[in-house]
Image 1: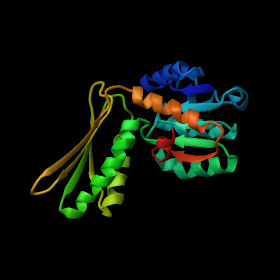
Image 2: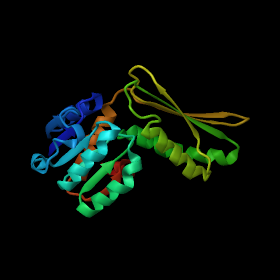
Image 3: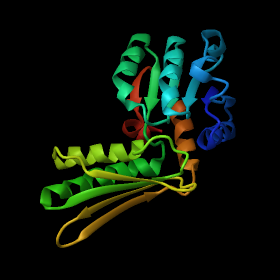
Image 4: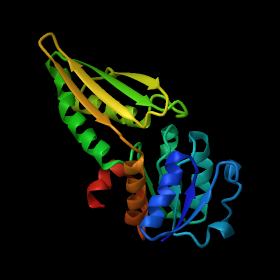
Length: 228
């Protein structure tokens, strides 16, 4: 495939490296080169099979609008913009393009989501819950998209209206750690996913773009990752 990677940060750069390892043609654009999606003209986007976005929350919607208008499939790993999901869903449906997003493209994290969803039933049995998440100091959004997804899964599985508290830390160069604690008068349950590198995020994003090739529709990674 001919891939355009938006963002040259730590994860975006690794996505480009992984895509080249998997024998794709790759071009990258930094946030400066593509301020307000200025570089994403229809003519510029013609040669690309798909676009992968690892930029910042404020850039996602302008980038997506430009790619959707040009009829290009898009994979978005940036978080902090999900309040705009309904609007982008409508644009993708009208344009009949493919759009795949996720708070986390790591296979391990998506397995962790399923574990947390099962364990969330503990709140029905006199347990309380808390979510702790740690990321590097440059991360723009807090809480993380992964933590928000964990919170949502616990709410759904516990059938509780009250949200489980999320505590966020921004420390050094922490890649990403998510901990869930369920506490009762009798015991505690600890669940943890600790990313050792960004490699899992990058590989998942490239494989997601491969999966999306030739498809149209609006997809969330946690619903399709087993098909990769």
